[in-house]
Amino acid sequence: MKAKQLTILFYLAISASLTISAQTQEGIVRTLERPTQTSAVLEGVIIRMQGGHNDVISSEKGLFHLPMDNKHYGDGYTLQRVKKRGYELADHGVVGRRYAYSNSVPLTIVMVSTAQLQADKQKIEFNAFQTVERNYHQQLEAMEQQLSDKTINEETYRAKLVELQQRLERYQGLVEHLADHYARTDYAFLDEKERVIALSIENGDWDFADSLLSTMFDPTGILEHYREAWADADRRLAQGQQLMDEAQEALRAFILQQEKDGERLYQLYTIALARFDNEEARHYIEIRAALDTTNVEWQCDAGLFIQQYYPQESAEALTYYHRGLRHAKTEFGENSAMTALCYNNIAGVYDNQSNTSKYKEYLLKASSILEANYGDDYYGLAALYNNLGGHHARERHYEKALDYYFKALGIIQKTYGENNPETAISYNNIGYVYASIGDDATALKYYKQALNILQNIYGEYHYPTAAIYNIIGILYSSRGDYSLALENHLNAKRILEKTVGLSHPDMALTLNNIGNVYSNQNDYSKSISHHQKALSILRKTQSEASIDIASTYSDISFVYFEQGRYEQSLNYLTKAYNIFETVLGKHHRTTRLHKFIIKRVKRAMKRK
Image (cartoon, rainbow, N blue to C red; front, side, top):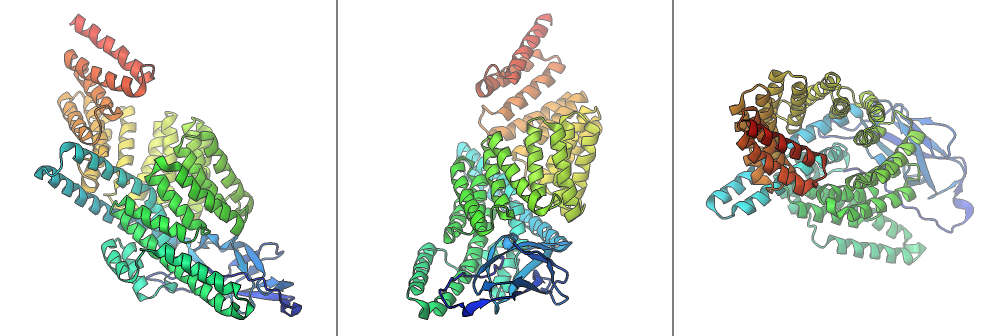
């Protein structure tokens, strides 16, 4: 829960006696309070006001004084810069937000050490993965029991299984965002019950958090309540100057309560996500966005959820993102980090739509803002550079892709150090480019570095590491080192068995990889066995006319061909060809290749 500076701008037509020259805005910088770490004042923070000519630096007591020459009480001002090496703002929006000058109310700025933030994020992510994987297995077991009891049929089971697996995959795309939110929770503003709820969520004990939330917060009818509260505040303000103080206090209390209720909605949203209850999660995150349509962060959170879980509703995601962009420009300015964040979010939707020109356009808008105003080592640029690298990699502009990926890596290492998930992602991205250009040795180097980091942080059994093991295995296969290839694919299989179980599509992919290695080692019986197991999994989760099933048919056909069993080879090859022709079209390269191989198999049959 991020405590925001509560400022209300009232421009009063009062005499010039309120004009104050050569006054200062007092302020204090402190650290974020966490469950195991109390807040402390922060010395040596550099602060500059928009339009100011000199930096001010916080004292050993965390105090600073911003010159407010010729300012009226209530006049607006904006911070341009808040910086201290090794620290970042707990609330991204502090720089660029419009504050109201007060000679009696100090401005509080909260910062968090980068090391603490990353440690907390890693812990929260780990706990989240543990809980979500447990929920996944519970729901999977319940579905399998229903199938066994015949309360659902095979078709319903398959549909539910696919939906459950998709929810797990999409949760992957949000878990880092959720962890960052809770790692920035300032416990200084929480009462005892709120502390227990926040800590329960961070520890992955979401059922307990849910039970506590239900005793203190009811989201039913909350929008109507706030509409009435806003209307009441407006009525009070309209009554005139004599009620101004009362109205201001009511509005201040209302805004504070709105922040708390917004956080409770986000907590309920988090719990619903972990239970794979998409509709409930959507309900909470959309109510939160509607509570304050000027809150840029809340609009972006709702847009991100729609983008991840309902990609077919891209127009809805863009509505949230553009609303956030509009208010980011108004509240923080055209060249603020929040405006750049909104551009990046909008780019993500265009990426999902495969609109590469718009995707690149909005990424470059975002990066140009951050480069011009915060420098090319600003930590917020790392994600943008990674996105731009991914864009150029897909366009096969590999040199440009590596340029952006290495820029991102440099920022991440400087900001977060080596042993960090962000660093692992960068190594993974770089490894992908080197693999794409055929430099398997260099690709292996970077993939192994990514794997080592994730293992150091999360331990041996972490679902995302299975994918890296599979990639490393494929690279070893391409180099002809089949024993090491098999070792890595078996490691992937072991992790998947423990984290997502035997019926997940990733398990089918891994079994096919193992089957291919056995085929290369001429152990055809083991190869067929693993491909058939993969096929069995895919048939439970996908329709018969799927590319994955077609590819598995093709793999099985190859093994039979190597054994000289041409009739069986032709049977599976024809099945694969028919699917490719239906899904990809008869002129697609893969379809044409399989048509050519069919002719080759038929010739071999005649010779035999």
